[in-house]
Length: 343
Image (tube, rainbow, N blue to C red):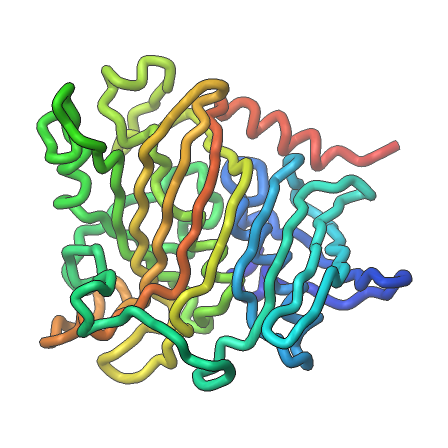
């Protein structure tokens, strides 16, 4: 059990032909229920590829596509990396995570150089352009109301999270996001929050953005009870769900460079998170999620609001995800199966 930056340890093991093999151990704390958290495991894959690319002309992850084929388990794993193609601007890698010789996750990762001035600058939309996307959260981290994480998060003590009442209100039966027969389109289900990692040694890294991209409140749980009759709940401090929302596919694209922390400008372990979901379908309650990960001016409950703080924040990454709705009992069953010794 370790803070995120320590639970992310991956080391080069050997080379077999054209495949570079890295190894590590999936930490038991970074789990939802009994199963390693999807964003954490994707972070392990990114970390392995970053180590492979560290001394190359393309050291930075640019875009990741991941397919979660089987449930991962706490314990040893290997990452097998194969280079598909390298060119002037990008290197394309296939990185697979295996446990006991079984393929669990496969990823396609684009690497490049995201340093300022490293490549020709053609077009960037940023403030003060009126076409630029602005921070979608209402509250400064110092004043945002706190929220309790689900007890299924084994790492809950390492996270401080908030909520955005104004965004949550849009999902209510009388909220502005509700549709009718004469509605054109519709904004779906939204969620927003600030997230701070409590360990003071944590720093914003691409693998950490993979974790945060998966930290949103699952959209099916935002529906009022009469709209989710098949989704069981148990009563805690907040409405908590005895369902598991495992990831099927996930993309992660890195946008603006990760800011350098400086006084009164950026936090090095806090993130703004905004999500949107427009469709939930059978089979197994498949739902789409769009995620934005933003920089933060300070940690949750710290600092103070200063003029112009919003204009300084940048979107560090965007993510899309397809996830399922499964009874939580399946999580416990799969987690126990993964921990059983092989005869």
